[in-house]
Length: 475
Image 1 (cartoon, rainbow, N blue to C red):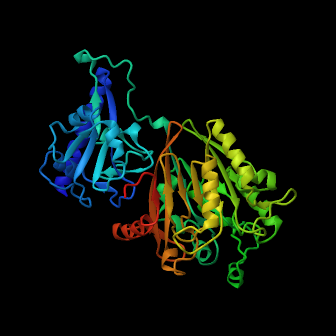
Image 2 (cartoon, helix red, strand yellow):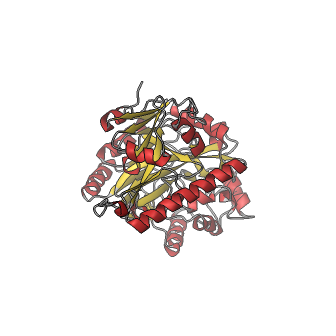
Image 3 (cartoon, rainbow, N blue to C red):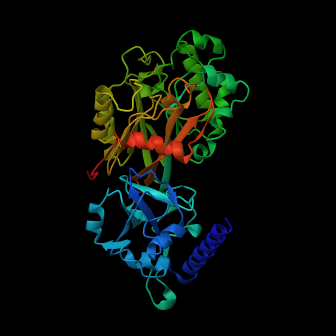
């Protein structure tokens, strides 16, 4: 522990000194990232392990599952070498042309060191000593993979170069979640403490630049928890709204099956509660026309449009020309809207309340609808309906996740899989989708979840990775 602390202190002094030098002399900083194939279980390694592998003192990159080489483009090599301050051990570090580098996009035993601008969705970004280059609270002054380039004191002209290749004012962390239904067993805990369900998972939620919550249930003053056990007719007490506000909800999806369970009046009351809280919504509303409208959200120059609908058979969605509620899917309209949004430079985010299956693989009807909106130009397509974590498809331009599992719902003991869930953190930079981080949670009772320990997380990821798809994956 003492050795690690001294190493971290050294890194902080080293990088802060470099940052001061950059500011004082007109030099620029280039941020690099450690990149692995997307189907990688490892999330984090130490800089000590990376440095040991660089200089050849270690044959295998410690903390990984047998990584035998790190690839670097020949254009970037001089800057990366300056970070480590010494030539690499050639068996471990391979220098390639950029074209050859990215032809190795998914070789499992080869990682890459790449500049921030080359981050893309098909590659997982590994954190170092717990620091995540994609995180919106990233601090470049303590990031070890920073190269200082150009020095006016040495006569180098850097006037045409940006201060850094990573501008925090162009970055957006968008967090999408699965099922929220504050009813039954979850509600019984919330009667004692409305904030209890998020108490162990709150930080990544509240830290999101845009946090999406799919709340399937209306608020109702006369809500009686005991009635929930007599049938699937749900409501939540208005006091439970405190949980959604506490975690910093920015966007609400309202296309859930149970939004109209108690008739129109609780739906109107719920919409008033959301309006008073200043939280915008989509996929449901005062009528069908409102519910079908894309919800536009801008953040750091990234322009988003949220669209959602209920893909089950008619009856679950009550929104009509004259009634409020969730809206049934009109995919022809949605495809048209997506194409128009893309023409305007807006990033479409589509979420579905679709058919529910308790299996990891999506059924054909679900897959067809998800792919239709993806092919129309949706960048993220996410299933809000699933009570278990499901498969995903990732390409260089978009991400489909067929189901995330429960966020706040009392199914911890229904099946082993209903005790697990994903929280997806999608990363956008300068108007472009660049990555998705899969956060994983496990429920300990009918209301409370926590982030998984490494063993549980590895088991879940391995199970999902086996049937998920990454564009260009090497066989």
